Image (cartoon, rainbow, N blue to C red; front, side, top):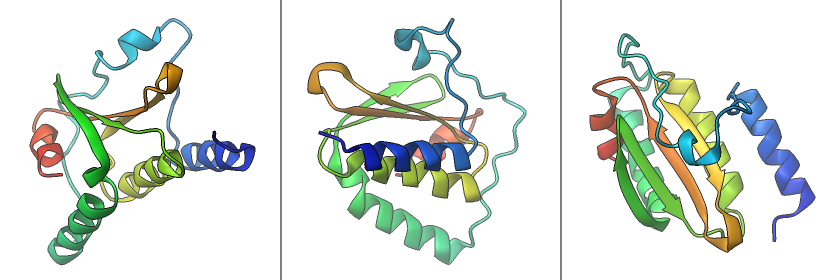
Length: 135
């Protein structure tokens, strides 16, 4: 069960990252199939090579080692995680941190119904998928 404080923290992080929610006309089943990223967006990470290597190692160990399922879609991937204590805030924090260095990525974060876990779609313009694969 997610506490009210955790939910407020996540909402605050998402607002700080300036992440837009789906409009009412977008039904949840379509949220993960439509890519909104434009192919003209520049694919530039602002981290230095040593910082990027360190960040990837940290993410693989602390976050992406907890993936229970991975699906390839369009210009990205959907990563599925168990809805365990603290996972939602970790994923929200991941999005906020990534937006600081890789503004070309698009994120969709979804809590699945009936305890089926959490889904995070990471996508981007053409070419960004290769960067996602390296996670």
